[in-house]
Structure formats: structure tokens, C-alpha cells
Image (tube, rainbow, N blue to C red; front, side):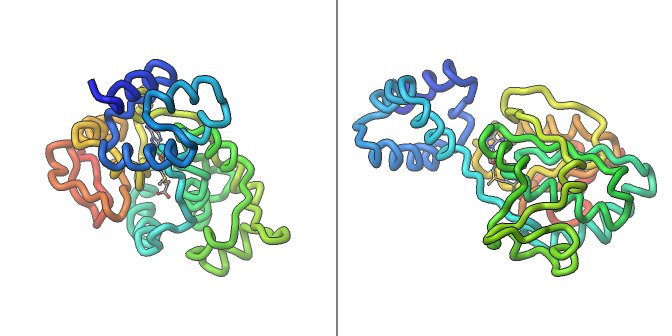
Length: 257
Ligand SMILES: C[S@@+](CC[C@H](N)C(=O)[O-])C[C@H]1O[C@@H](n2cnc3c(N)ncnc32)[C@H](O)[C@@H]1O
């Protein structure tokens, strides 16, 4: 067994995180550059150091998770959500069950709430937002962002839902209160069911084909018939029917009734 495969087994035992379900070349490259930067010569040496040093362990988690996000990421898609997808979902049901899976530092679930608030009173909204990374969830709950993550936020929404504090922007408390954050590992933890809308963007690209197939099935089972699965703008599903989906719009899939 090679150095990396041994590392994958050790990490799985220590954390429950299964690196073998992430694309190997990409993950190996990211982690090798980290351990070399820290002066280690092999994954084995790196793992021993991770076990002894909590800060290094967190640095490893940070490097493997990639938390890059922004509000209204690929803004045109959010427009489709607002104008086409949500009105249709709301025709059937005024209380939508919504999950932002792999939500990173919160920009995605907060974008959902801001858009939904145009269609429903904020007090009636609730979105579940999950991620594998505790640090990202902690930052999401803080709700304080640098200007660069707000670039795509429409001016009226920026005025309504953010307060500028020094160099940072603070998200409105009512938007914050509409989101429940939880830690959840997509590759290991069970999924709840009966969702009207699941947003899972820019994480499946990091997984192997097998892991992706299994997740598409799980997301499909987690949606109620007619529910919508919203994916990232490089993540179209090539054979949606095999998972019980039909294409509703580019990057939106409807679970077949
Ligand atoms: C690039 S961010 C995407 C954030 C947001 N969805 C977006 O599109 O802007 C990827 C997120 O996936 C999370 N992630 C990676 N592996 C995961 C797993 N197995 N289960 C849940 N979240 C995971 C990372 O922690 C990171 O926050």
C-alpha cells in the first residue's frame, strides 16, 4: 500500500472522513503542498504530526475542505430560482422544506433566505444548512463577511440585509435566524426526507464518480416527488433519468412525480 493510501486509512479511523471518495490526484496535490510547506517528507510523517498537533489538524481540515463561497454565486441561476422555480414550488406548498448541503461559510443559505423573503414573510422561512467543517459553520453563524463575497448581491438587497461595520458587512439578524446550521458529512451521515428544495453546489466536483452516483441517488430519495435539486454551474447531471430526475432548467432537476 502506498504512502497516500495508508494516510487515507489513518484519517478515516481518526475522523470518519473518507478521503478515498474525493478525486485522488486533486486531493493528493493539495495535501502534499501543505505537508511540504510544513517541512514533512511523507504522508506518514504528516499524519503523526496531525495526531500530536491540534492546530495542524485544523490546517489539514481547512486544506481538504475548500470553503470558497460567495453570495448569489452564478447570479443568473439564482434569478431562475427566484422567478421560475420557487413560484412553482410555492403553488403546491407554502411551507417549503429546504436544505443547503455543503453550505460552507453561510453565503448560500443566506442567499436563499434573502430571495425567499421576496416571496414569503421572513418569519415563515426556515432553511437547514450543513457542512462537514466546524470552522466554516462557526463563521457562517457569525455572519460577518468581506466585501468581495458580496459582489453579486443586488444593491437593494445589500441595503436591506447588511450593515457595514468597518471593512466588513454583517448579515441581518432576521436572515440569520431563518437558518439552522448543523455539522453533516454527505459521505457518511443519513439524509432526512421530504425536501421541497435541496441546494448542493460546488462540492460534488471534488468527489469520485462512484461517490457522486451514490449521492445523486441519496439526494433523489431525500426529495419529495416534484421537489427540486439545484447544483453548481459546472455540475450538470448527464443522465438525470437514472436517478429519477428530469431537467427543469439548466442546473435544476425535478424529482419525477
Ligand atoms: C467550495 S465550498 C461550496 C460552498 C457553497 N455550496 C457554494 O457553492 O458556494 C465546498 C464545501 O463543501 C464542504 N464539504 C467537503 N466535503 C464534504 C462532505 N463530505 N460533507 C459535507 N460537506 C463537505 C466543504 O467543507 C466546503 O465548505
